Length: 235
Image 1 (cartoon, rainbow, N blue to C red):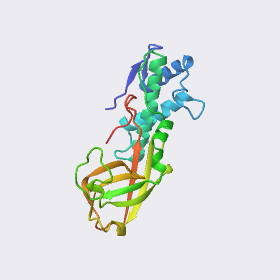
Image 2: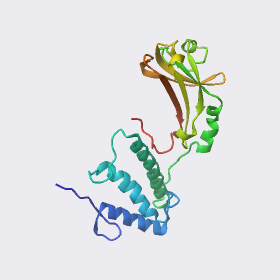
Image 3: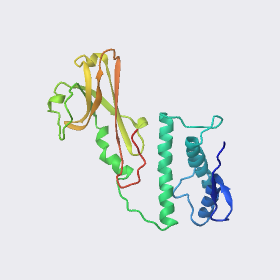
Image 4: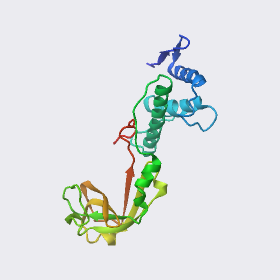
């Protein structure tokens, strides 16, 4: 049995398929309120790009996936990123319509990408990643003098532009098996800049150092403005 979705068009009063209704509604709005400021089109047809990218490309690929059409797969990092980016675009579009078409305001505030880059500029100042075997619980205000880092292994790290993006900055460090000889297990990581412990994270389970030829550690910091609509979800 095939289920087809229909919507009642508020413009013509006729029954229309979902895609047709959405396209007509956006065209009607765009005539009086250009949508380009909220959805930056690559070409000249903003309506087509909204439909192709958000409706057909993401919505239908998720909820109406078919064998003969593009579809998104669970646990795919590429698809996850695409959905996240699409949700961000859809959120901006909905807020734009709410404010300018329905006169609905929403209080917001937060840090800009430029401000975030300034706040995390220390990540470009010769950071070092700390690898510790300490299984002790993380405590507030820990420093490099804490017992957890007394026997930690230090490895140079560097800021990685190609793994970063607006609102997300990351550093990467690597170490060979020879550098891990003093550790039999890895329990936590830290990030050090100058003499300050800037970040630390404890693994859910211990990582055995046996048979490790090379260990790469990537640490990223992401901007999440709590007063903005949520567009990032943990998996």
